[in-house]
Length: 194
Image 1 (spheres, helix red, strand yellow):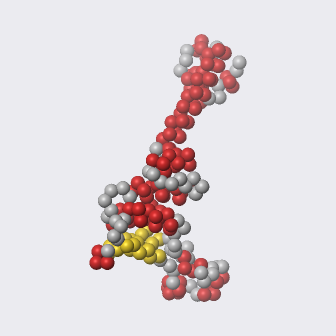
Image 2: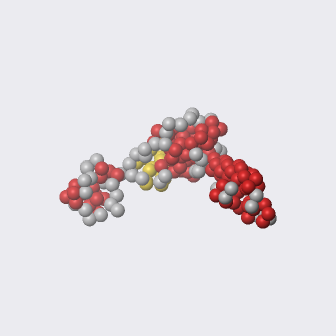
Image 3: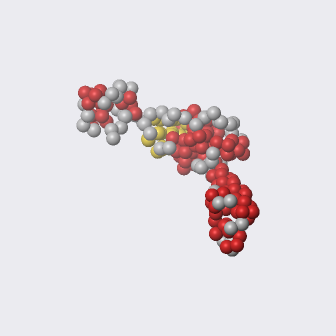
């Protein structure tokens, strides 16, 4: 039996720690091979468990567990990034509702910048999406999360930021240039030059 039988990194590593008379034994090499494979599986399992412990690295099967633990309806058919942002939002939304908490929850969904303005005189607050431009793709999930954490007597207004023609002109562009880039009139709303 040659040394090629030891394909497991742990098996090869263990063989190096053994006395020379064991290194030539076919039986001992076979034993180390099987033990090394088991250790490789064990290490892989530990790595997977460690990834599952953190929402940002959790695989899809672990996100199912996170959703269940937090009492969320399973989003197993949705993109992983959307599922993660929903879980993070739920975690951030635990505790007393404050403007910073609402901002934190909102930013966990849009991966951008928002501002939250409190209007105590009208029992409401405004969430303004600064970046990215336009309406975020998963706005329905965000609205659901905000409704869940905000006090029932407070209203919420969502404001979106768009590019206006004055911005385009201010950047030194003309309609001919923009049209030449293949950007439609509708596309200008969320366009930022590179």
